[in-house]
Amino acid sequence: MKKEICILIIILSVVMISLTGCGNDEAVIELEQESIRTGMAADPDETADCEPQNNVTVYVCGAVNHPGVYELPEGTRIVDALHAAGGMDPFADHDHINQAMLLEDGARIYIPTSDETEGISPGGDISGMDLSASEGTPARINLNTADAAQLMTLPGIGEAKAALIIQYREENGRFNAIEDIMKINGIKEGMFNRIRDMITV
Image (cartoon, rainbow, N blue to C red; front, side, top):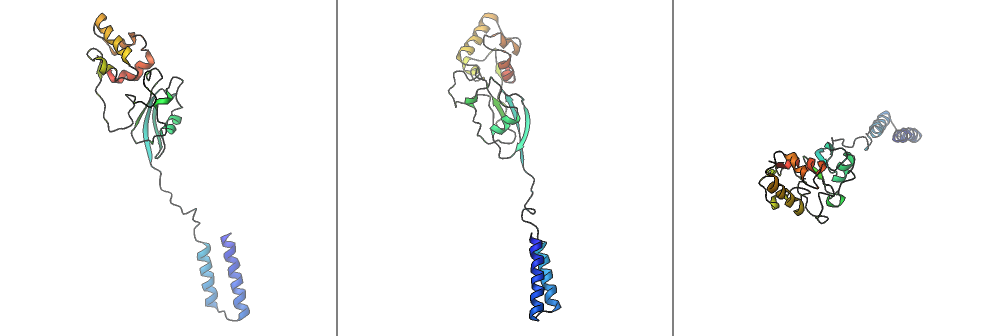
């Protein structure tokens, strides 16, 4: 459309110069060159900056359908990471995750189950949900020496389960392997998989 308008301007200018007798070759050439420069100017939409978009890499784990590492555009939020991971699984607790939080590069996004958040009010802090790559790895909890308070720092381990773990030690001796924690009533494979990297014997 711009080129058509410029061509029309050139034609009209030539006609006007011819009619008035005031034109000369230099004036016509100058008009043509100016019109060509105007017509060939790049469309603003085409010359918009096409800078590469920055991305963040996050690890989504816990009660999601497809745990894994995902690369997402900078400025997206936890809800976008959850969509990338196939959404929360049926056992996830939606009330303890701020899905509107902005993603940070290197973040670990842990989604707890309803069993893990039992007894914790909505919005309460969930141990093990590390949204910062710079916080470091916490020391593992020793099942054979930890007291009730230390055991309760594990996601899903409340006062009742901590008491059962201590009771097991008193009645059966030490835990020989971290998998032995599944002998505790109420601690099944799903919960074990979520705390296995946080415990030792």
